[in-house]
Amino acid sequence: MTLADKQASDYVYLPFPVPHGASRLTVRYDYSNRMGADENRRGNVLDIGLFGPGGIAPGQADFRGWSGSGRSSFFVAPDQATPGYFPGLPPGQWHVVLGLYKLAPNGCHYRVE
Image (cartoon, rainbow, N blue to C red; front, side, top):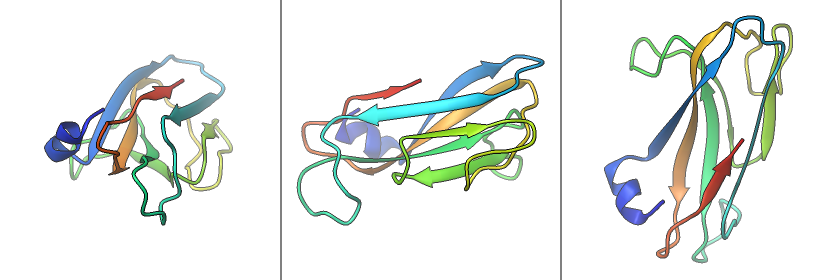
């Protein structure tokens, strides 16, 4: 991810399928040159959140939760979820959203599982 990516949009949406009958969704992420959101050095801060199968379009978005950069993992299950997220796990195309809060001049490598 580069500064040009951030100029194009403050958010990156990563689609993935949740199959019928899924019992739990666990998301983990990591990124390079991590720093605290309140620091002023040349590092990276990527926030993370989740949209359900209702989509990401304004007015129709199925917002399911947000961690900011405070967590490196979260889960959603039919009847429970990590604080900051809504339980429920209907099948369909979901999206992890990365908020490009701060990017270093040399960019950022990330991994989402």
